[in-house]
Length: 324
Image (tube, rainbow, N blue to C red; front, side, top):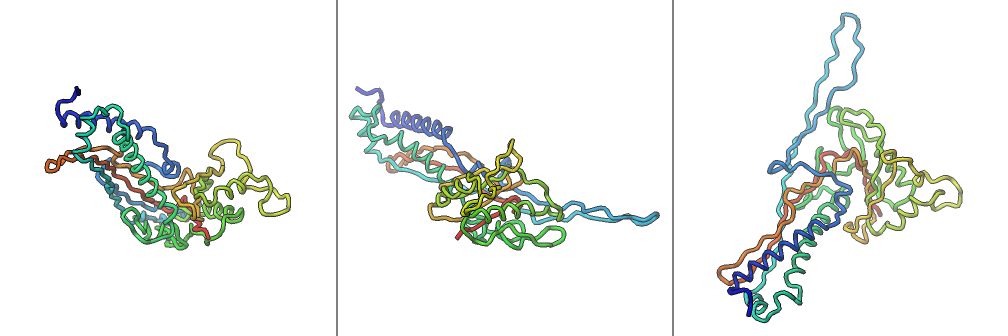
């Protein structure tokens, strides 16, 4: 004797159980992308922004002379859309009838519904991670995809040797020549990070803590470079500046972030000014479960959807090395 009189009643319980497991797993997910991105404004249907170069230096004005005149310079407006990502699973009517009639409802031995909820959540999480990994992998690429803008503020890649300042048109670089990860490459990258000017051409000052985002290929190399007290790859006893300890956060520490979603063979990395970077993740709609029943076939359709995007409103605060 079963507690369910109809398949519809049974389906209703399955819906509720599946959604409950999904919501619990969603809250338990550990993410990596939010360690090197900042949350974006999703209060509107899309994100719109524009940058402006402010006033420059004052000019000497002689007695009775005319005031030095300056003006603001407006940049190109950007619009970031929030695309929808979905995945679905169909459970035949016959399968659910079998579960209802043979007493295995509570046991769900094959974990058809509890496991599928976990799988949906894992799929949603992995999707976000791979999209956000484009901020590193595709940093020097201008090829647009469904999830990657390709070009940014000045019509160039996120990492480029010829970025232009909004007001003067002078160029600056945040793209290193591809190389193996070495002490010299990291020190050169840190120098480039500190040298990036603001839109008026002024130095930005101290960069504070720096995030080093890399893939599995360099995981042991990073440990060697950041933990060895003396200069790596040499026999001398010169102090390794990358291994110098800082007394407190925000004073120039290098914070390593291993991102497995960059891929085992990816040799590149990015140095990111933790305080001043503009790498942004937009979570417009958190992953959510939706359940439907096909009136024509009686099949049970489980759907998961989310709306997510990444963008960089500025290339400043990032230096990229594409690796070997």
